[in-house]
Length: 291
Image (cartoon, rainbow, N blue to C red; front, side, top):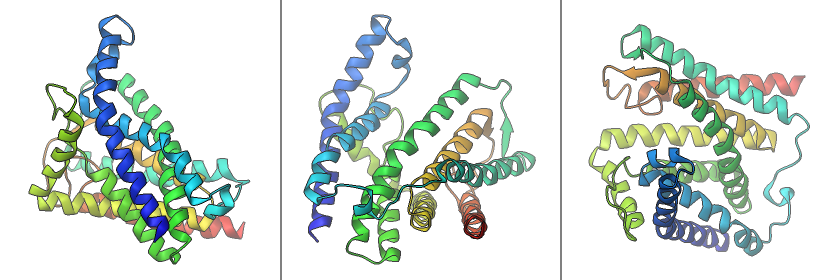
Protein backbone atom coordinates (compact mmCIF):
# COMPACT_ATOMS: atom_id res chain seq x y z
CA UNK A 1 0.00 0.00 0.00
CA UNK A 2 2.86 2.37 0.77
CA UNK A 3 4.38 1.74 -2.66
CA UNK A 4 1.02 2.41 -4.32
CA UNK A 5 0.63 5.65 -2.35
CA UNK A 6 4.09 6.79 -3.45
CA UNK A 7 3.24 6.04 -7.08
CA UNK A 8 -0.02 7.99 -6.73
CA UNK A 9 1.88 10.94 -5.27
CA UNK A 10 4.36 10.72 -8.14
CA UNK A 11 1.51 10.90 -10.67
CA UNK A 12 -0.05 13.89 -8.92
CA UNK A 13 3.27 15.77 -8.75
CA UNK A 14 3.97 15.04 -12.43
CA UNK A 15 0.56 16.30 -13.57
CA UNK A 16 0.83 19.44 -11.44
CA UNK A 17 4.31 20.17 -12.80
CA UNK A 18 3.12 19.64 -16.37
CA UNK A 19 0.16 21.99 -15.95
CA UNK A 20 2.35 24.75 -14.50
CA UNK A 21 5.38 24.32 -16.78
CA UNK A 22 3.57 23.91 -20.12
CA UNK A 23 2.84 27.67 -20.59
CA UNK A 24 6.50 28.47 -19.89
CA UNK A 25 7.64 25.93 -22.48
CA UNK A 26 5.16 27.28 -25.01
CA UNK A 27 6.15 30.92 -24.49
CA UNK A 28 9.85 30.03 -24.58
CA UNK A 29 9.41 28.17 -27.88
CA UNK A 30 7.45 31.06 -29.38
CA UNK A 31 10.20 33.50 -28.34
CA UNK A 32 12.87 31.32 -29.97
CA UNK A 33 10.86 31.00 -33.19
CA UNK A 34 10.21 34.75 -33.26
CA UNK A 35 13.95 35.42 -33.11
CA UNK A 36 14.72 32.97 -35.91
CA UNK A 37 15.93 30.16 -33.63
CA UNK A 38 14.27 26.85 -34.48
CA UNK A 39 11.31 28.44 -36.32
CA UNK A 40 9.72 24.99 -36.61
CA UNK A 41 8.73 25.36 -32.94
CA UNK A 42 6.06 27.85 -33.99
CA UNK A 43 4.16 25.08 -35.78
CA UNK A 44 3.43 23.12 -32.58
CA UNK A 45 0.26 23.86 -30.63
CA UNK A 46 0.03 24.16 -26.85
CA UNK A 47 -1.00 20.53 -26.33
CA UNK A 48 2.34 19.34 -27.72
CA UNK A 49 4.18 21.40 -25.10
CA UNK A 50 1.84 20.20 -22.37
CA UNK A 51 2.72 16.57 -23.19
CA UNK A 52 6.45 17.43 -23.15
CA UNK A 53 6.05 19.20 -19.82
CA UNK A 54 4.46 16.05 -18.38
CA UNK A 55 7.41 14.02 -19.64
CA UNK A 56 9.88 16.45 -18.07
CA UNK A 57 7.99 16.28 -14.77
CA UNK A 58 8.03 12.48 -14.88
CA UNK A 59 11.82 12.51 -15.30
CA UNK A 60 12.32 15.27 -12.73
CA UNK A 61 10.53 13.42 -9.93
CA UNK A 62 11.89 10.01 -10.87
CA UNK A 63 14.98 10.15 -8.65
CA UNK A 64 13.08 11.14 -5.47
CA UNK A 65 10.60 8.33 -6.19
CA UNK A 66 13.40 5.78 -6.55
CA UNK A 67 14.93 6.95 -3.28
CA UNK A 68 11.63 6.70 -1.44
CA UNK A 69 11.06 3.17 -2.81
CA UNK A 70 14.65 2.17 -1.93
CA UNK A 71 15.36 1.00 -5.46
CA UNK A 72 19.11 0.84 -6.08
CA UNK A 73 19.41 -1.32 -9.16
CA UNK A 74 17.73 -3.35 -11.88
CA UNK A 75 17.33 -6.45 -9.71
CA UNK A 76 15.15 -4.50 -7.27
CA UNK A 77 12.68 -4.17 -10.17
CA UNK A 78 12.99 -7.76 -11.39
CA UNK A 79 15.22 -6.84 -14.33
CA UNK A 80 18.52 -8.33 -15.50
CA UNK A 81 21.09 -7.36 -18.13
CA UNK A 82 20.06 -8.70 -21.53
CA UNK A 83 22.89 -10.13 -23.69
CA UNK A 84 20.45 -10.33 -26.65
CA UNK A 85 19.20 -6.74 -26.41
CA UNK A 86 19.82 -5.87 -30.08
CA UNK A 87 18.10 -9.05 -31.28
CA UNK A 88 15.12 -8.47 -28.98
CA UNK A 89 14.74 -4.82 -29.96
CA UNK A 90 14.80 -5.61 -33.70
CA UNK A 91 12.43 -8.56 -33.29
CA UNK A 92 10.00 -6.46 -31.26
CA UNK A 93 10.03 -3.70 -33.88
CA UNK A 94 9.28 -6.13 -36.71
CA UNK A 95 6.60 -8.02 -34.73
CA UNK A 96 4.73 -4.75 -34.14
CA UNK A 97 5.34 -2.89 -37.40
CA UNK A 98 4.78 -5.63 -40.02
CA UNK A 99 1.21 -6.63 -38.94
CA UNK A 100 0.21 -2.97 -38.69
CA UNK A 101 1.58 -2.17 -42.16
CA UNK A 102 -0.20 -5.25 -43.55
CA UNK A 103 -3.41 -3.96 -41.98
CA UNK A 104 -2.80 -0.60 -43.67
CA UNK A 105 -2.41 -2.28 -47.07
CA UNK A 106 -5.72 -4.10 -46.59
CA UNK A 107 -7.43 -0.83 -45.65
CA UNK A 108 -6.02 0.82 -48.79
CA UNK A 109 -7.32 -2.01 -50.97
CA UNK A 110 -10.72 -1.75 -49.25
CA UNK A 111 -10.92 1.97 -50.02
CA UNK A 112 -11.11 3.01 -46.38
CA UNK A 113 -7.78 4.81 -46.76
CA UNK A 114 -6.24 6.46 -49.82
CA UNK A 115 -2.60 7.28 -50.54
CA UNK A 116 -1.67 10.96 -50.48
CA UNK A 117 -0.45 12.58 -53.68
CA UNK A 118 2.91 13.54 -52.17
CA UNK A 119 4.82 11.59 -49.53
CA UNK A 120 6.01 13.97 -46.74
CA UNK A 121 9.44 12.47 -46.12
CA UNK A 122 10.34 15.07 -43.48
CA UNK A 123 7.21 14.17 -41.52
CA UNK A 124 8.08 10.47 -41.76
CA UNK A 125 11.58 11.26 -40.50
CA UNK A 126 9.98 13.07 -37.56
CA UNK A 127 7.85 9.98 -36.85
CA UNK A 128 10.99 7.80 -36.95
CA UNK A 129 12.69 10.11 -34.45
CA UNK A 130 9.66 9.92 -32.15
CA UNK A 131 9.63 6.13 -32.47
CA UNK A 132 13.30 6.05 -31.44
CA UNK A 133 13.00 8.38 -28.45
CA UNK A 134 9.58 7.84 -26.84
CA UNK A 135 9.98 4.09 -26.05
CA UNK A 136 13.35 4.77 -24.42
CA UNK A 137 11.54 7.11 -22.02
CA UNK A 138 8.19 5.38 -21.53
CA UNK A 139 9.30 1.75 -21.25
CA UNK A 140 11.73 2.33 -18.34
CA UNK A 141 8.92 4.28 -16.68
CA UNK A 142 5.90 2.02 -17.28
CA UNK A 143 7.38 -1.46 -17.69
CA UNK A 144 10.54 -0.79 -15.72
CA UNK A 145 9.51 1.25 -12.70
CA UNK A 146 5.72 0.96 -12.38
CA UNK A 147 5.47 -2.72 -13.24
CA UNK A 148 8.56 -3.49 -11.14
CA UNK A 149 7.06 -1.75 -8.10
CA UNK A 150 3.70 -3.50 -8.57
CA UNK A 151 5.46 -6.87 -8.78
CA UNK A 152 6.85 -6.33 -5.29
CA UNK A 153 3.37 -6.69 -3.78
CA UNK A 154 1.27 -8.45 -6.44
CA UNK A 155 1.26 -11.56 -8.58
CA UNK A 156 2.62 -11.11 -12.14
CA UNK A 157 -0.85 -11.30 -13.73
CA UNK A 158 -2.34 -8.71 -11.37
CA UNK A 159 0.69 -6.45 -11.74
CA UNK A 160 0.51 -6.72 -15.55
CA UNK A 161 -3.19 -5.81 -15.59
CA UNK A 162 -2.66 -2.85 -13.28
CA UNK A 163 0.29 -1.53 -15.28
CA UNK A 164 -1.68 -1.95 -18.53
CA UNK A 165 -4.54 0.03 -16.98
CA UNK A 166 -2.19 2.83 -15.94
CA UNK A 167 -0.61 2.86 -19.40
CA UNK A 168 -3.95 3.08 -21.22
CA UNK A 169 -5.39 5.77 -18.94
CA UNK A 170 -2.31 7.98 -19.19
CA UNK A 171 -2.22 7.72 -23.00
CA UNK A 172 -5.95 7.98 -23.61
CA UNK A 173 -6.68 11.00 -21.44
CA UNK A 174 -5.29 13.64 -23.78
CA UNK A 175 -6.97 16.85 -24.80
CA UNK A 176 -7.73 17.20 -28.53
CA UNK A 177 -5.18 19.10 -30.57
CA UNK A 178 -5.66 22.88 -30.83
CA UNK A 179 -7.83 22.88 -27.72
CA UNK A 180 -6.13 26.02 -26.42
CA UNK A 181 -6.05 29.04 -28.74
CA UNK A 182 -4.92 31.65 -26.18
CA UNK A 183 -2.28 30.44 -23.74
CA UNK A 184 -2.35 31.65 -20.13
CA UNK A 185 -1.01 30.39 -16.81
CA UNK A 186 -4.09 28.18 -16.38
CA UNK A 187 -3.97 26.62 -19.86
CA UNK A 188 -2.42 23.41 -18.52
CA UNK A 189 -5.34 22.85 -16.17
CA UNK A 190 -7.75 23.60 -19.04
CA UNK A 191 -6.07 20.86 -21.08
CA UNK A 192 -6.56 18.41 -18.22
CA UNK A 193 -10.25 19.30 -18.10
CA UNK A 194 -10.66 18.93 -21.87
CA UNK A 195 -9.06 15.48 -21.76
CA UNK A 196 -12.34 14.33 -20.18
CA UNK A 197 -14.31 15.43 -23.25
CA UNK A 198 -13.77 12.00 -24.80
CA UNK A 199 -16.19 10.50 -22.25
CA UNK A 200 -18.98 12.12 -24.30
CA UNK A 201 -18.31 9.47 -26.99
CA UNK A 202 -18.51 6.14 -25.14
CA UNK A 203 -17.99 4.04 -28.29
CA UNK A 204 -14.70 5.76 -29.11
CA UNK A 205 -13.73 5.68 -25.45
CA UNK A 206 -14.23 1.91 -25.22
CA UNK A 207 -12.48 1.23 -28.54
CA UNK A 208 -9.46 3.40 -27.76
CA UNK A 209 -9.07 2.28 -24.16
CA UNK A 210 -9.37 -1.42 -25.02
CA UNK A 211 -6.66 -1.26 -27.70
CA UNK A 212 -4.27 0.68 -25.48
CA UNK A 213 -4.96 -1.72 -22.60
CA UNK A 214 -4.10 -4.67 -24.84
CA UNK A 215 -0.89 -2.96 -25.98
CA UNK A 216 0.08 -2.33 -22.36
CA UNK A 217 -0.59 -5.98 -21.49
CA UNK A 218 1.50 -7.22 -24.43
CA UNK A 219 4.38 -4.96 -23.43
CA UNK A 220 4.14 -6.18 -19.83
CA UNK A 221 4.29 -9.82 -20.93
CA UNK A 222 7.30 -9.12 -23.15
CA UNK A 223 9.05 -7.56 -20.19
CA UNK A 224 8.19 -10.41 -17.83
CA UNK A 225 9.15 -13.17 -20.27
CA UNK A 226 12.58 -11.64 -21.00
CA UNK A 227 13.21 -9.90 -17.64
CA UNK A 228 14.37 -7.01 -19.79
CA UNK A 229 13.02 -3.85 -21.42
CA UNK A 230 14.54 -4.27 -24.89
CA UNK A 231 11.76 -6.38 -26.38
CA UNK A 232 9.04 -3.96 -25.13
CA UNK A 233 11.10 -1.03 -26.45
CA UNK A 234 11.22 -2.63 -29.90
CA UNK A 235 7.48 -3.39 -29.87
CA UNK A 236 6.63 0.13 -28.73
CA UNK A 237 8.86 1.67 -31.41
CA UNK A 238 7.33 -0.53 -34.10
CA UNK A 239 3.78 0.49 -33.23
CA UNK A 240 4.64 4.19 -33.12
CA UNK A 241 6.51 4.14 -36.42
CA UNK A 242 4.02 1.99 -38.34
CA UNK A 243 0.94 3.91 -37.17
CA UNK A 244 2.60 7.30 -37.56
CA UNK A 245 4.18 6.63 -40.97
CA UNK A 246 0.96 5.17 -42.38
CA UNK A 247 -0.92 8.24 -41.16
CA UNK A 248 1.51 10.45 -43.11
CA UNK A 249 1.35 8.57 -46.42
CA UNK A 250 -2.40 7.86 -46.41
CA UNK A 251 -5.57 9.61 -45.30
CA UNK A 252 -8.86 8.12 -44.15
CA UNK A 253 -11.77 8.22 -46.58
CA UNK A 254 -14.40 6.44 -44.46
CA UNK A 255 -15.05 6.41 -40.69
CA UNK A 256 -16.06 2.80 -40.07
CA UNK A 257 -16.92 2.65 -36.36
CA UNK A 258 -16.67 0.44 -34.40
CA UNK A 259 -14.29 -1.35 -36.78
CA UNK A 260 -11.90 1.56 -37.25
CA UNK A 261 -11.59 4.96 -35.61
CA UNK A 262 -9.58 8.02 -36.51
CA UNK A 263 -6.28 6.08 -36.69
CA UNK A 264 -4.82 2.57 -36.61
CA UNK A 265 -4.96 2.48 -32.82
CA UNK A 266 -8.72 2.73 -32.31
CA UNK A 267 -11.34 0.15 -33.24
CA UNK A 268 -11.98 -3.57 -33.52
CA UNK A 269 -9.57 -3.97 -36.47
CA UNK A 270 -6.55 -2.53 -34.59
CA UNK A 271 -7.56 -4.70 -31.62
CA UNK A 272 -7.42 -7.76 -33.87
CA UNK A 273 -4.02 -6.70 -35.21
CA UNK A 274 -2.79 -6.37 -31.62
CA UNK A 275 -4.00 -9.88 -30.82
CA UNK A 276 -2.18 -11.14 -33.92
CA UNK A 277 1.04 -9.46 -32.76
CA UNK A 278 0.58 -11.07 -29.34
CA UNK A 279 0.30 -14.52 -30.94
CA UNK A 280 3.41 -13.89 -33.07
CA UNK A 281 5.26 -12.66 -30.00
CA UNK A 282 4.57 -15.88 -28.11
CA UNK A 283 5.71 -17.98 -31.09
CA UNK A 284 8.91 -15.97 -31.37
CA UNK A 285 9.61 -16.17 -27.61
CA UNK A 286 9.24 -19.95 -27.75
CA UNK A 287 11.60 -20.10 -30.73
CA UNK A 288 14.15 -17.83 -29.04
CA UNK A 289 14.04 -19.89 -25.87
CA UNK A 290 14.63 -23.12 -27.77
CA UNK A 291 17.55 -21.58 -29.61
